[in-house]
Length: 86
Image (tube, rainbow, N blue to C red; front, top):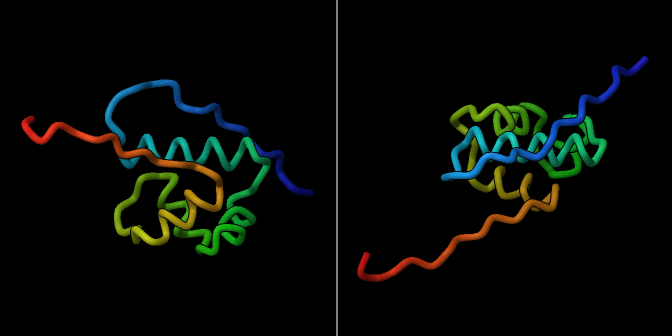
């Protein structure tokens, strides 16, 4: 019998994006979609280990793998323009 999926809330804190905060967003999005980590990894085209490393903010995650997960889960990142003088 499968264990129930614990659903995580979207992080509410604000501030600079860190690997931990990004991982929290990924985990929340995945669990709110009702996806177990192995199913989400397969959907995104990465290994379960890679998805786990993203969610737990471990180093050694390839940038292309991170973007596969973000795209697969429908998470968008936005880069804001900055002033050339500051």
